[in-house]
Length: 494
Ligand code: NAD
Image (cartoon, rainbow, N blue to C red; front, top):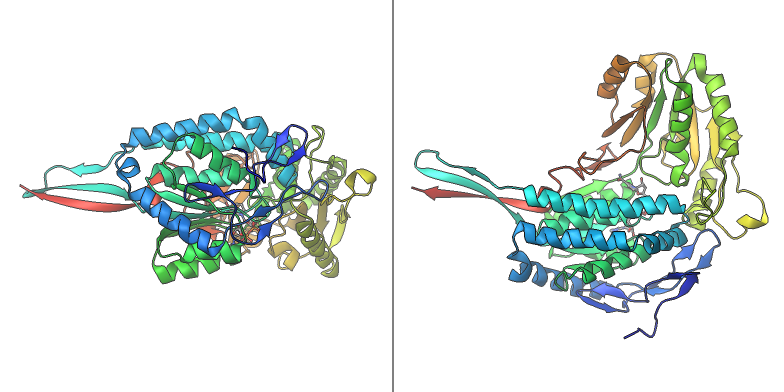
C-alpha cells in the first residue's frame, strides 16, 4: 500500500524512497526532527524525512536485540547466513542504476563514481558472504586431560555510524560484516545523505532477513548517533567520520567498555621521487586529490616534490588542474562535481581564505566557478596552493575538499620529517621507478595504507584503517567478520 508521503519525483526516472525510516522491522515516519537532503548541484531540496528520535533508537535497539537472539537468526549456520548476504549483493546489483542516480542526486558525485560505489557495496556483501562460508572455529584436539576449542559468538546489537562522502559503500562495509557475524545493526547515515541508506534498508528487507535485524535511523549525530552509542544494548560501535566525533564516541565506548572501530580523518601525503614517471605521477596526483571533489578521507591532499623538479612539476599540475571540467554529476563529461552541501562548500572556501591569510599562493582555483550553470550549486574550483610551510594550518588540517597543498623537499630525511609531521596517518602515495626506494619509504611513512604508483585502489581482502589520529581498528580482510564477534573458549575433560 503506497504511503501517504510516498516517493518524491526528484529527477526524471528517479523515485526517492517514501518519507519513512526503518525502525525495528517497521517502516514508518520517525518521531525526530526533519532532515532535508539536497541536490548539491542545484541546491534544491530533494525531500523531507522525519528522522529518528531517541525513542525510535530505543525501539530499534530492543527489536534488534530480540531479532539477534531469535533462533531464526542466531541458529543459522554460516552458509545459511551467507545466502542472505549473497541475495543482498544481487539486489544491489539489480538496482545499480537507480541507486547510482539517487546517490548522484543526493551527493553531486558523477554517475561513474556512484556506479562504482554501488558496485563496491555489492562486492562487499559478496566478499563477506564468501569469507563467512570459509570461516572456521579452532579446535586443539589433545592437550593431555582435555581438548580445547575456541568458538566465535555474535556481539548482539551493533551501532554503525557513517559519513556523507561515500554513501552505500561505507554503509555496506559495516552492515555486511556485522550481519555476517550474526548481529543486528542500528545504522545511522549522515544527516545530509540518508537516501541510499534507506534504499539499502528496503533491499535488506526484500532479501528476506528477519524483521528488526537492521534499523535505518537517519538524524542528527548529536541526538540519534549519541543515543545509539550510549544505548546499553549496543555492544560495539563502528564509526566512520571526523576525528573529533570519533574521539567523543571512543570516550562513550570506554565508559561502557565496549569495542569501537574508528575510521577517521586524513591529510595524506603523496610523494613524487626524483625518478618518477612524470606523466603517471601527474595523473595520479590529480586523481588522488580531485576525484570526489576531494571529499575523501584518503584524498592525497599534501603533495611533496623534490626541489629540483618542483617548479616544472607543479607548473604542469596547475595547468592540468585548470583544465578539469567542473559540472553536475549527471553530465558524463564532468570530472569534478559539486561539493556535497553548500555549508561544506563554505567551509572549504573558508580554508582557502585561511591559506591566503597564512601567506599561501593560490596557484589556481580559490573561488566558486562563475556561470549560470553553477547557480545555486555547491561548486568550488579545484585549487592548488603553495608557498606555505608544513606546519601551517592549511597543511595540517583536513579540508575535505578539492584543495591541494604543494611542498618542496630537499632529501629523504626532509621528506620523511614533513610527510610524517602530521597528527594523521591514513594513507600515502609514492611515485617512483625505484623499487628499493619505494620499499624503504613505505616502511618509514606513518600510514595505514601505502600506494605505490597508484592511488585510491581498494580490495575487500586488504585490511584498511588508520595510524595515529586517523583511526583505530581495521575494516576488510579475513578478520572482518571476527571483529564483530566475541570469542569463547571451551575445555572438555576427557
Ligand atoms: P562527522 O564526524 O561530522 O559525522 C560522521 C557521522 O557521525 C554522521 O553520521 C554524524 O551524524 C555522526 N555524529 C556526529 N556527532 C556524533 C556524536 N556525538 N555521536 C554519534 N554520532 C555522531 O563526519 P562527516 O563530516 O560526516 O564526514 C567527514 C569526515 O569523515 C572526514 O573527517 C573524513 O576524513 C572522515 N572519513 C573517514 C573515512 C575513513 O575510512 N577513515 C572515510 C570517510 C570519511
